[in-house]
Length: 116
Image (cartoon, rainbow, N blue to C red; front, side, top):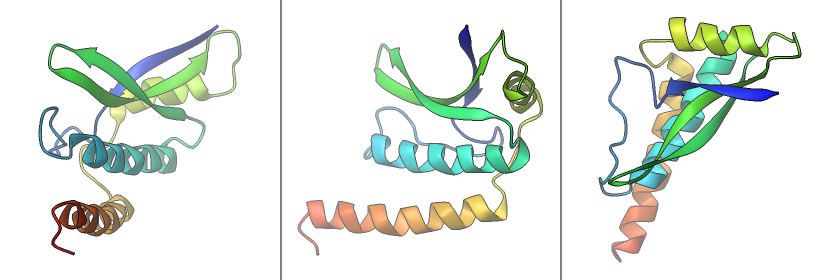
């Protein structure tokens, strides 16, 4: 049976996109993709995915680690290790990925405002 465990939105000591803020969805998706990539570097057997969660103020997104209780393929151990011992800060590759995403989303935002 497939199950999942909540990992989070980003490394615990980093700021992340806040639900209700301008461009939340695009910023959150960029951060979540960078977080998943970082988790995969640390826990290569993990199956990390973005999951939506309903909240009184709207839908927010987080990374979850997926695994199958009946299959011992390392995904469960990776998911629980990521939840318990995940990174506290962005690594250098994640920072570079976020910088690239930021440049792209800033361009999109300026275009929406008619400034490009």
